[in-house]
Amino acid sequence: MLMLDINSIRSLHIELTTRCNARCPMCMRNYRGYSYNSGYPITELLLEDIQKIFSIDFLKQIRHVNFNGNLGDFSNAKDALKIVDYFLTNSTSQIQIETNGSANTPEWWAQLANRRITILFALDGLEDTHSTYRIDTNWNKVIANAKSVINNNGNAVWKFIPFMHNKHQINECKALAKDLGFTDFTLWDQGRNQTPVYSRKGEFEYWIGTNGWPGGIPKVTDLLNNHLSWFDPSIKMSIDIDESSRLNCISMQNQEIYLAADGSIYPCCFTGFYPETMHQPGNSQIKPMIKNNNALEYPLSECVEWFTTLQKSWDLPDIMSGKPYICLNTCRSR
Image (cartoon, rainbow, N blue to C red; front, side, top):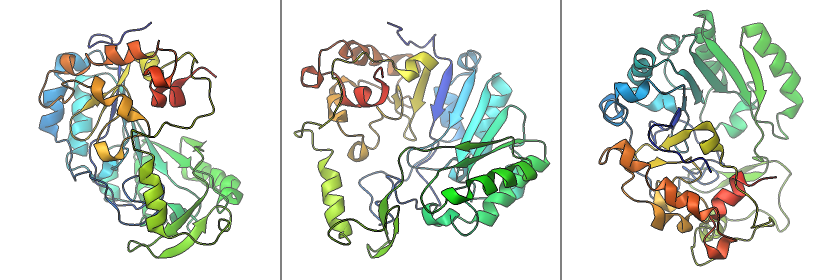
């Protein structure tokens, strides 16, 4: 089994901030548009934090950096541009940024026009459909920011999540992406295709996906209570998979670690336990394994030591024996 230690890391997945200007209904920073915060603080990593965590000597071994958040958007981080420059200056890494692209100005985005940087702009349709999911973002502003990158010889990719309300526009968006000079057009479908959408106050507004659920429109508080029960460690996860499946950890294959916005280190964002009240279902199994993993408090070499304990748990026969549900659900052999 590949064992990931400080010297074998080649790729970084970084969430710089928990701040975001959008209100996407299937993002865990709110609940279906409803203003619900289950315990995450508003925080971010500054340039001085990144410099403390990742020394210049360490960066010489890094080949790829991905800025993408569970909670926040890269463009909302105060030191985003300075941090990217730190990686460009002190490593040979390729940099990928995934963003809703609706914050800041075209002039700000032009500073990221670099051949070693690829920016994936989330554009889920045309102007009339995009904000159905990307609530509180502005399609025209995203296009203007992307064009600024393109016009300054940068790499912009159109990233499209297909829904029932926008999939008829895929070909038109693909053609527009080509006309505008995007370097690629990519479809990203992770099953985000059905949900009621509520206002910040919890009032029903519209459906994404099929037109309603049997029994009428559910109250957002009822749905939220059911959702929170998923995180109860006393409830055995109900999964239709072979629990004896072999695990092929994608992060280990990519020699990658995940840095959350509070400075904590994990193998990947799925195993991330930050904030604790929003972790993935079944991650209560992982919590006892985590030791000294905040890189603002401990050396990076020490922050990855607990990975060995996690890897050993993959050899257990089933979930009840301690084999991690989240690893089975994410990286089992198919």
